[in-house]
Length: 109
Image (cartoon, rainbow, N blue to C red; front, side, top):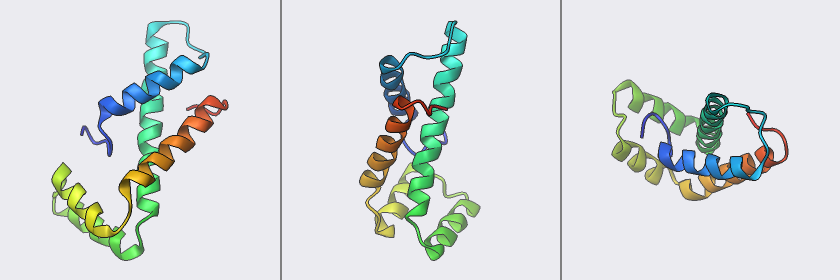
């Protein structure tokens, strides 16, 4: 998972599709790759913020304690969010949709 809440390859594919739909201010392959990387990071950040905003204070404290204990495996994250009572799939889908609307509307990262 490369420190991403959603598989990095999946984020990259989604950003690639968005970038095909909108003219970009990049003249070289390096500039295009840098723009893609910034948007992957921005999308991942938006997803993370959406997920953590669904957690209450007690759940956030529990999550931070899990990190302090170095329990940072995909299985640990999956178990935590399943028991937290949030619809992770819906939260991620909503964040991706909002990012897409902003990106295509001219507010890309």
